[in-house]
Image (cartoon, rainbow, N blue to C red; front, side, top):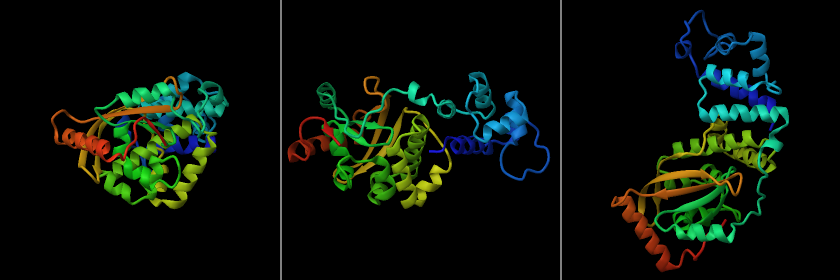
Length: 294
């Protein structure tokens, strides 16, 4: 992906989201486009208009940490956006490949010890994915929960983004589809900033942008996000609605991969549905023993 255009579009999109009152400035004069003017951002960051304009044109190479921090404060960037800005600056410097841990190839397979750990998680679904949102491994309950995604995947490795934007079944699986779609794009955008030379990411984004208007619109917003925690809603064909809390963790032993754990509130309808799903998976033999590689 073109780093200069990424920088330009990201900074201009963040600037467009702010109005003078957001940053304590008077709203003076007619504005031709939404958001702050470049001069206002420059003043807030303590740099010249000429210098900030150069940065917003994509020239982030060699910019100091203090200037990046000042711009992040001026644009009111959250933690995910600030990290994205710094990743774009590293890419502009050509240092991304040196700073990022070595990536796993598409042939990654779970180590036996990871398989044992996943199999030991019996109270809720657990899964491993990469930044491109390939579903790489699950515990048995995770496999059962995502049975439709596995069954409908056109390739060996299911991909959450392809499923979300290219398969109508995703609207059934994700009752709050818009939030799921926003999240998927933000994860991909964040990963693209971390590793701008990932050819597989280029291919995935190109495919989705060509085939999905919903994806193109969201991709152009340049929203990013970090792994975190929260609650998601799912609808499973066998057990109905599932409201599950989740925690997502970067895997230090496998750089670039994320472990996500799901759990239902004890004694809730979702907990009973999750227990039923586990029983169905065990009795029907739909899910084999062991962590399943996608």
